[in-house]
Image 1 (cartoon, helix red, strand yellow):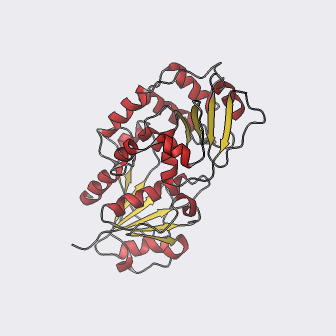
Image 2 (spheres, helix red, strand yellow):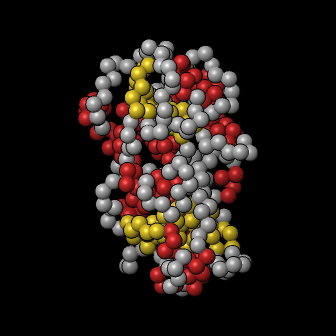
Image 3 (cartoon, one colour):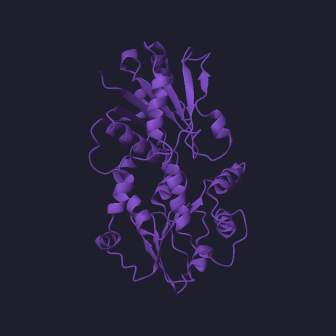
Length: 341
């Protein structure tokens, strides 16, 4: 049987979440025997996100070159358009000439809203343009059995169980000294000043991901340690080592759920305010409790700050992860879906 080729298209917008998801997807597909061509308009973040040689089966290519990849016999078996990035017209025209036509997937952003279940798997026949005659299918990640699930590579939980927290701290020259360890990955507009005030209720070590400026003044109980840019594996280790994780966007949001530690999500703010509904849709499913939900709202600028950090519930993230593990992971579902469509 000929090796199946997957074409992944990604535009790096501004916060690297898109390329992070694409790289995890590419690695997962390659580990399952697929040949992957990853078309990027900016491959520079991979230098720190995935240092070293690309895994066998993955080829990273410049987006601009895809416009000229016009031979139909060069188009792969499955084409994945991630996050509405809009494929180059020349490549779509080659897709339309290919016999048989490739399976065309639009991998959407993650959301807990109800429309995801209604829209997952729906076809979008192309009646005009270079892709006339093709059908694009919408594939929605999600948190319920009627969605495409979440990215999760085989062996993830086993790797976490083998993780040595103390050894990781020692290898990175970090000395928690009994303090609560908090990882912080946040957008530039996050209110770090009010956050550290709430973290001052106990000795706390903040491990701040690159780009996170320290507040002008730190309470005596809070230490702030800036971190360099971390690889994807390094970021997972940070989540596993911390007692509380502040995450943002989509990729780190999903990884925090697999880490199964208490976490707070900063959603990407949208001009029309729809991010508030998206945040509430997830909170309704995750149900962290009224006090923690209010804290999430405050962190996202949607409510007044509470006087204190709510108590951390270590069991809720474990129960949530157990429920997610009952669903097939995204790549397993994507492979099944593309075989059927």
